[in-house]
Amino acid sequence: MHIELSQFEIDENTFEVTINYSDIKFDKNDIGNTIGYSDGKLPPHFEEMIDQIITRFPKKCNINAGYRLLNLQHSTDRKDGLLIGNKFFQMDKIVTSQLKKANKAALFLCTIGNEMELWAKDLSQKGDSVLAYLVDIVASSAVESIADILHNRINQAASKLGLNVTNRYSPGYCNWSVAEQQKLFSLLPNNFCNISLSDSSLMKPIKSISGIIGIGTKVKFSQYICDRCGVNDCTHRVYLLSKANKANNIVL
Amino acid sequence: MNETVDAIGVCIEKGKVNKSSSYPIDLQGQDGADELTLQALTQNIAPDEILKTCNDAMQRIGDKFGRNEVFVPELLMAAKAMNTVMVHLKPFFQAGSIKTKGKFIIGTVSGDLHDIGKNLVSMVVEGNGWEVIDLGVDVKTAKFLKAISDNPNSFVGLSALLTTTMANMASTVKEIKMEYPKTTVIVGGAPLSEESAKIMGADGYAADPQSAVLFLNRKIA
Ligand code: B1M
Image (tube, rainbow over all chains, first blue to last red; front, side, top):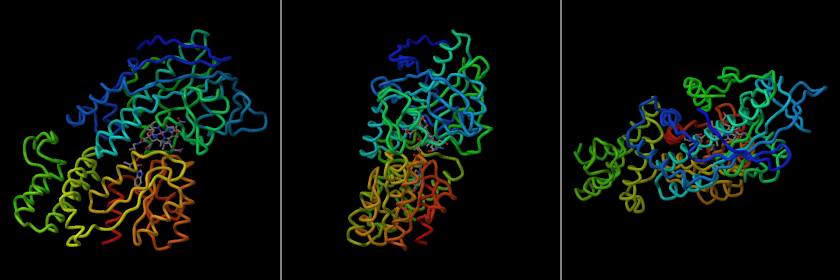
């Protein structure tokens, strides 16, 4: 898979990345897995509904993605995290062990906008809870896919400079407190990617992802890292696992 | 048992809402819960008999969900079929000849805007014979307290999706318990667990809509 994407430097070391809906490759098996069905076991009726949702998706999305490159350093007095830009992020070993060899960090945001969310809400209010649920699931899958594409793009930009990238990590995952979103957002321009953050660290639109990717000569990407985390019922783990199983299709 | 009533049970379990609904494939073109309930009532079948059949059918689909034989979409289809039956039974509920299992007040806690999970719980709980009062999202504690005062003996459900809003959930639970110690509060949402529910003083934790139903049904058993 090779995706050519354009990126614009909107501020020093801050880039907006253009991603088109057609870059998203919806995988119905993955979507089915998220609901609970094993590969090929998604009932045809629901599969048809998902097809209809995917067909309408282009008119229901407003994709925004971008990142800012900042220096990443170790703090001399604290071992429980890393210094990124001028902020100390308190992180678990799961994250710091992967990022510690990086000397740059890409703080990223991406979203599909709020149209899908409004569609699901409207369907719920009209009593069509099944379609509402499936719209929500497809929307989540779309934004995960956008994050994959953005990750890929950052990797391409880094490799042009002879650098490697790590896995991506998001506040709220891998024992990294979701409240650290406040620090992450404070290092990005206001309303970057049209995403806002509430006091309770909730991003709006809902279908948005934030995170960090380590960059450097000595870092590497490892395909599956959930075995280091204790949250066994995390459905994101199922997603990553199914992605790892299909690793041949992923270029990073 | 009457054939029509049996058929209603099948429609609920399989999520067949009405004749025109294309789901499930094996019942296409046949009458659904909607038409069959009308027929049953015309045949003077007692509404409580219909209700019991529906509750049993919801129990069966719930059990299948518990065994991972079906997933949220099937559960929702069943709840949708059940809600169609409830529309026809509404006059009997209003006349008092049959009763809902009780009132369930639900809302997503303050600071949290997630509503899809909460809506699914509402739909399934309602489909299982409860009257649901949905307060929406970003619900402040005062709104929960008012709803409890307006609906004595109701049960309360709180939903949250982030650990940050789970903190707001904990304070809502605390205030409800302070003002209405006898009110049963059940919590759910992705970051919750049995343990966190216990720590915040809730009476129960439900991982999914079906667990919420089982918990509520146990409380009135
Ligand atoms: C009253 O009784 C009851 C009983 C049952 C109740 C109930 C009440 N309320 C709910 N239930 C239950 O029944 C419902 C039906 O089964 C369920 O309701 P849900 O609302 O949970 O279910 C939905 C119908 C479908 N499920 C979901 O939509 C959530 C699934 C998981 C994998 C998930 C997804 C898909 C997503 N996410 Co993310 N996400 C996770 C989730 C992990 C998990 N195990 O669930 C969770 C919720 N996310 C998390 C995080 C951290 C985040 N996510 C984010 C983003 C995303 C996506 C956009 C990629 C996507 C959609 C998110 C969305 N909210 O729509 C970010 C936040 C987004 C925002 N707007 O602020 C971000 C902050 C990550 C980041 N930094 O970008 C974690 C929160 C934990 C925490 N630390 O706070 C998380 C638990 C994952 C984890 N770490 O394991 C049950 O919870």
